[in-house]
Length: 184
Image 1 (cartoon, rainbow, N blue to C red):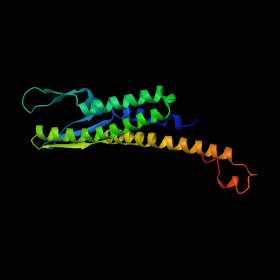
Image 2: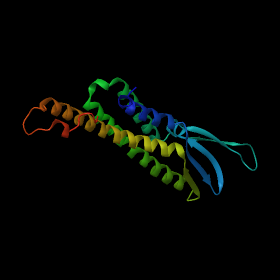
Image 3: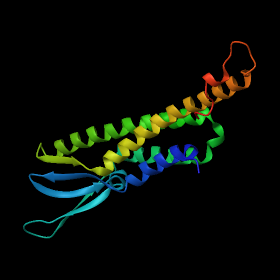
Image 4: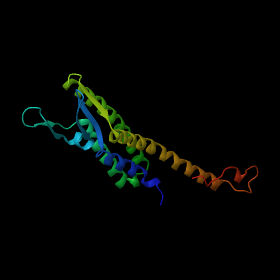
């Protein structure tokens, strides 16, 4: 089984699945609040904080637009990779830009969420970014790089095939063995 046709699909599936891993851990004044997954950041969540005196307090965390956009970009990359194989170079261009936008979006998420938490906690909040965030960031970067590199591989293969058809060992001055065609 060749991995090449499935590489973009696997990278976007990896990005989507990593949204369910712990993304960030928030602590305020040295008290660990809780870790959040990318899915919780994208859809919003409810946290319950224990009060020293009185009943537990429930607080709604609204959805973060950057996390929601990352989920949508990942899902769109999966869909394009599944249905768009026949589109060829256009698919690679679209999948490349999805990877780039996903990567930039993840960097924006980090900046936005850190600033937002610092404002709400008046500088007392500490945000620690966990493996889920890092993996999604790397999957989007890898998807962009792969979808930029794959057309170059195809172009090289077509060039080698065209060159091997036009060269023959009987041609004067041409050495057919000087340019191997079995690289791809």
